Image (cartoon, rainbow, N blue to C red; front, side):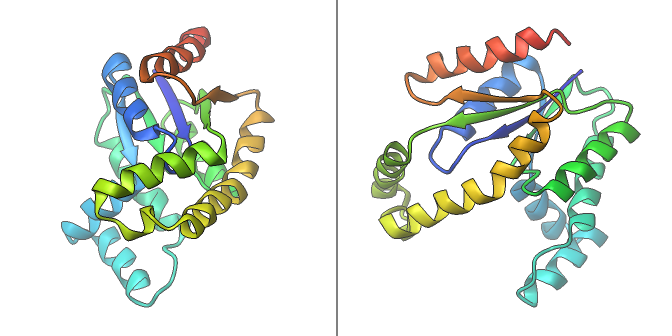
Amino acid sequence: MINLILFGPPGSGKGTQAARLVEKYKLVHISTGDLFRYEMGNNTPLGQQAKAYISQGELVPDEVTIGMLRNKVEAHPDAKGFIFDGFPRTIPQAEALDLLMAEEKTEIHTLLALHVPDEEIIKRITLRGETSGRSDDLDENIIRNRIDVYKSETSPVYDYYAGQDKSHSIEGLGTIDAIFDRLCAVIDAIGK
């Protein structure tokens, strides 16, 4: 079993690479955004709790999100591993994820952070905005703010897993295949 956290700023190609990693390593992809949509769309008890917080303009507490993650992990007892996308974003979330993994008799094996220079991210998102229909993809100030939020949120989590010798920064420039090969080289070196 191998459990990965895939990090990358908006426009880093994280979604493209996650799909390829899922296929190659037969992992279960866990996106917190997808989890929220599923739980709320199916009106589960956790989905109802999340809706209540969101409707009041509040952040959903970590324990609700961890509950959703637990449900997803436990729904796949025969999984060869998991790839976490968009979680954890804070040290308390990372600690809670580590605890959940320990309860499931496994662990996070590596955090892979796609590194892409800010100007390249702005270029990619602006290009995407020409076809995505999202006005926020065309506003450079909004894009720069999203990059800043990513950096401020993820740096501590990267450092947390670096303290466990599990963080790896991957060059996110080049062809999709070249970036994928870099990611696979790190995963294969883990030897799990």
